[in-house]
Picture 1 (spheres, rainbow, N blue to C red):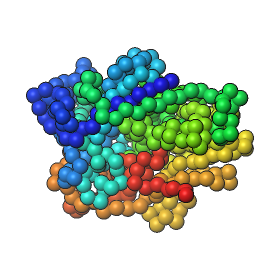
Picture 2 (cartoon, rainbow, N blue to C red):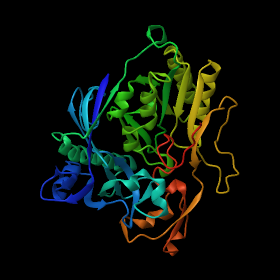
Picture 3 (cartoon, rainbow, N blue to C red):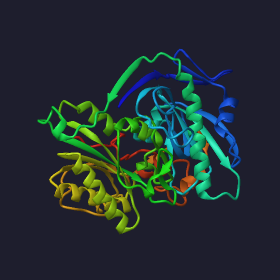
Picture 4 (cartoon, rainbow, N blue to C red):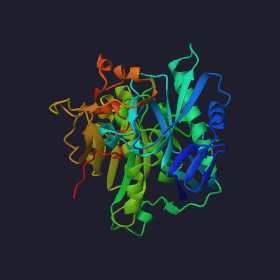
Amino acid sequence: MLLELGYIPIEEIAWGRKTMIEGNVLQIHREELIRKTRGEDARISSIAAELARPGESVRIIPVKDVIEPRVKVNGKGKIFPGLISGVETVGTGRTHVLRGCSVVIAGQIVGFQEGLIDMSGPGARYSCFSRLLNVVLVIEVKQGISQHEHEEALRLAGLRAAAYLGETGRNAEPVEMERFEFRQRLKSQDCGDDLPGVVYLYMLLSQGLLHDTYLYGRDVKDLLPTLISPTEVMDGALVSGNCVSACDKNTTYHHQNNPIVRELFRQDGIDLRFLGTVVSNANVTLQDKMRSAYYAVKLVELLGADGAVISKEGFGNPDADVVMYCAGLEEKGIRTVIVTDEFAGRDGASQSLADVTPHADAVVSTGNANERILLPAMNKVIGDIRVVEKIAGGQSGIMQRNDIQVELQAILGATNELGFEYLFSRGE
């Protein structure tokens, strides 16, 4: 499968009379954006649109999702399949990317774990979203709908907004093109047998209760581990539906720009053979965890892998899943690396993961999410600052001060377990 990504740099965003790219400026017709975002969803009562730029004294809270605007120029499928388009397989053809900007969905809190983005100050260094030009949509929903309906309304609205803005890049000329070609190669068929074959095991949070991820529009909590092309990941097949701790939740933007997939492609044919991506879920019951672990290990072994990289999402319960995957792979002789964050307490002295195994002898840490940080007051808040006392990593009573002290887990993406952010480990 061959996918081309064409990058159109956006260096400024502004409200304008027409939604279009003019030079490197994304001009946005505010009222039309709101209309396209709402669509025909009667569950949405109001939408306010704001702009937030790097370096501004702006805090966005609470954040539900972040999406990169893109448009499918040619090839099979359309943007965000199974949700706002059909279910045809993506991952081939050409997709244009509006690089440097994003759609941020904020507003009424869905669960009690969504976090914040600071566009400046000490908190900004912990989130890549602080360095983007953000089109922020504050969405309010009608009273009486369920939390799951609330989440769905916001999720689909964000995808519609990103698709609307992405259309501006359809006829633009990219300044950079990247080609990603994935060929399924079993060890016995490949000419590069001297290189180790590596599989990426991509754990997706899927525990229900607003801990959901969508593959081609289907909630993955009932999914058996499945082999997909990594180009499908890069082309919008995965969408976030999570309302979990902000520090390590994978937003849709994270899925679109997964750095593990990119690095494995970069090393393919040089240091390793990239054999494919197995997407799996994080389950609730022990039986379901064991079923997925056995099945995922079988798929990785069938691919002839010598090694595997596992990333996970969330903490606590998913720690048990990742330990099962790791132990099962290592027992098959498949050397395994885990990418995870830690919840080691504010003093760093507690056990970092809820479960352990002696097989986990190659672990990349993306940081301790319990570390505290003092965030100064911002001149402008987009959303509702009062929820800072409810979100994970916040605490009761902090609204009594102008500045706020929270754990890193309150900052969106701070310890993202794809190795996306400021905190990471590197072996030399």
